[in-house]
Image 1 (cartoon, rainbow, N blue to C red):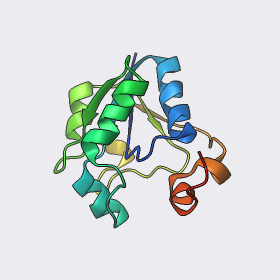
Image 2: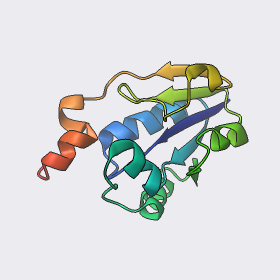
Image 3: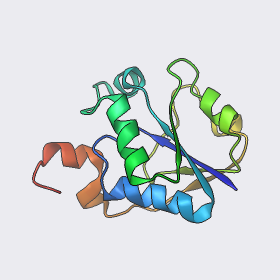
Image 4: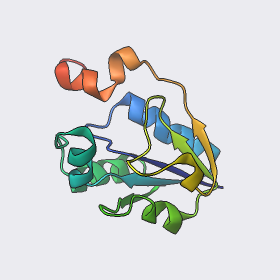
Length: 131
C-alpha cells in the first residue's frame, strides 16, 4: 500500500517523526516536502530551513521513504504522481488552499496528536530550549 504524507517538516521533531513512522507502519511511505514559496504563501513566513535541507533531513532519517519536493503551482500534482492508497494528515494539518477532500483520490486518515504541548512546530519556534 502506498501511503502519502505531506508538510513543511521544518526542524524535524518527534511530532513529525510520529507521523512519518505511522506512515511506514501502514505501507510504502511517500513524503512530499512543501516548497519554501508555498510555506511562505500559506503560513505567511518562510520556513527556518530551506526546502532542500528539509528534504535531505527526511531522506537521512527515513532512508526507506520516497521523499520529493512539492509542486509550487499545483498542490495535487505530486499526489496524482504517487497515486496513494492512503493519505495521512497530522492532527491539526489543513489541506492546501483550493484542495478539497473530494479532490483526493484515496482514503484519508487523521492521526492523533503526539504531545502537541511539546512538539507542535509553532510552539518550538517560540521555545529554543526544547530538543
